[in-house]
Image (spheres, helix red, strand yellow):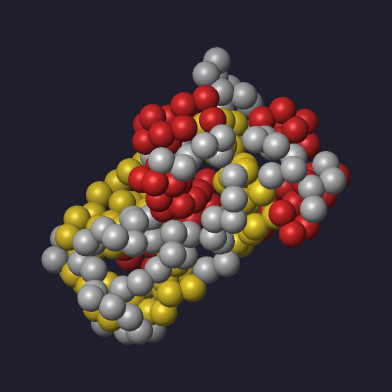
Length: 223
């Protein structure tokens, strides 16, 4: 799929700063749930500015899909994505990614770091294998929660949110802590999948270590 141009079929906001982009799917596109590709904008001056984004669709889908957090204040790729419309083109590169499903456990995501988990959880739902998997999702405010309704429907009580900058009766307030993980994790003996901004990743991995979670039971991908 290297240097493969694809047309955008639809592009719209999912949250105030996250775009939902659906594109055509090349015949040779092949990925495992959780994997990503490097995306370039097929526009003069941007063809060499690639950024990694995760596939959120299922491998069997006849389209490709991405949820991409945008940064309008930065003069970069995601700001330029805000100018695109259906019919414009993106260029996709090789497929890569370290996160893959390795068994039942707890998914811990910070913001757009949830994107590798979307395809994995959708795939498990498709197979009827969601089991006791849980998603702990940290965001600043309620309006930042990507796919809130879908996760709620999919996971029910196994969808656990925490907000750092908004206090509400609906969700806990603060940051993920050892106590929060211990209270909400599927099992401290299960697999932990962690993805988010580097400071959050470092903090959670330290907390998991303090909870005696084995290093080989922690699956990570820096966002």
